[in-house]
Amino acid sequence: MTPIIFLHGALGTSGQLKPLAEQLDLEQSIHLMNFEGHGADSISVRPFRMEHFMENVIDFMDQHGIDRADFFGYSMGGYIAMMLAKGHHERVGKISTLGTVLKWSSEIAEREVKFLNPDKIIEKVPAFAAELEKRHPAGWENVAAKTKDLLLDLGDNPRISDSEWSSISQPVRIHTGDRDATAGIEQSMSVYRELKNGELMVLPDTPHPVERANIKLLADSLNDFFA
Image 1 (tube, rainbow, N blue to C red):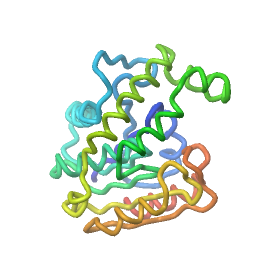
Image 2 (cartoon, helix red, strand yellow):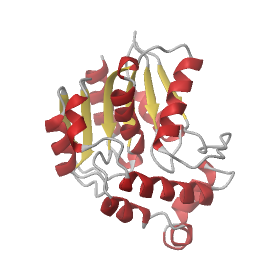
Image 3 (tube, rainbow, N blue to C red):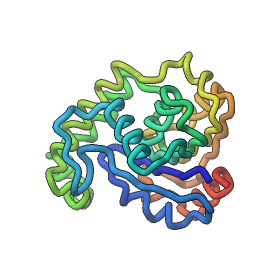
């Protein structure tokens, strides 16, 4: 059966998605991976770029003998899954996303990078800074700086243009939280309408952080979608 690969978001690691993966009741094997430069063991000397993270996924598939996979992508991970569907169609089955900004612009990127200042994170949300230290013990501040550069580059050069969404033919289920200020319902709906085989599910009382999603509800949706 087609394996499922989970892709984490910016500043994240695969460990964030493990509680969700453990809730799934599927016959398919489930794989979690970290993008380069993220987590305890991964070091990247390259700038963070969406193409590099896409290469990481292809390399992971090759190393594990996976010819074709389904994908669940949280936030940034969902965009990378969509890029894979566009550029490596033959290796991608179904895609499900959660909290993914699907249409990028310089204005959206500028909005998002305001939250990536390490000094402000330490000052205003010290608990989050402590969590980032656990996720990236080699230096979360460097991860934040590289992520800022990544998002500004993505804002200037979206990897999927408005005219290209209709070329993605894989089944896609987009999940968005009704209180997600990062990936809003309106943008998710606009992409869903352009996809050939798109579906949209709005999760109630759900902001952007995956830790605050209704895991049971999300797992039920993924069990239904990937079965």
